[in-house]
Image (cartoon, rainbow, N blue to C red; front, side, top):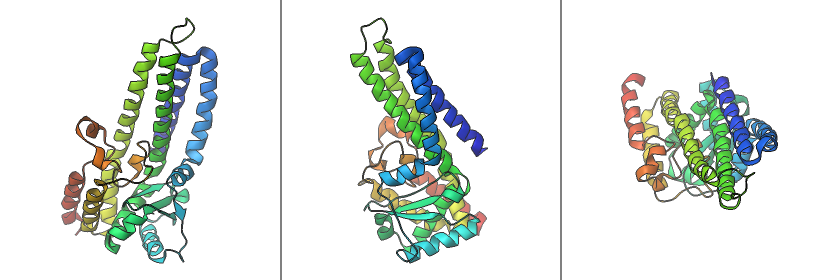
Length: 283
């Protein structure tokens, strides 16, 4: 099923590029867009995890450098019956974490320095169990590609805005009003795609973490602390295109009014309530 979803996402991105290329440059524009889409599809599948980790300046650590962290990840990976992922630390004081990679054999988990400082050992284990649940169910493949798609859509929207301002007025140019409308609609479409992909997967990963640790209260406590802290600030260089990858929305403090409808994460209160309902099942 995850392979099918990934193929659909890549196909949609290709069609989007080709369609916009046709609007902006006719047949030649479509051909150029097709080549660009092919390159982006290849990069998003094989290298998007590397690009995301590099964007957040994540540093890979060894068991010697982070023994306690490695022991927790190894214990959870064994329990989840998946290969040991690579472990990264992000030099950022805001507590957060994410997983990335196209499959469990090529996965990585990344936590910020702030998370390790804020949470106790049990809470760190719960957060890592959440991320490994994403790995276990191939969520990271779809999520990482969704981040690439959202970035591509943002780039297209920028191109359309500039084209609307400076490209109109000629017979061989696309309608500037149409380009301006598309520049507004496309980012909205990206937000809807990310929201649809992310929200349900967060609930599933929360449940997976609760079952891996057998202590839902550990994740409840971690989510409460992370949510409170992330309302004060956000991870440096956080982008809306990759926000859905984090365990807590890095823009939690900025989600207000209409924008909150398109949040990539369910509310922390809902997540904690669902974990509370799991306690009787697990115990």
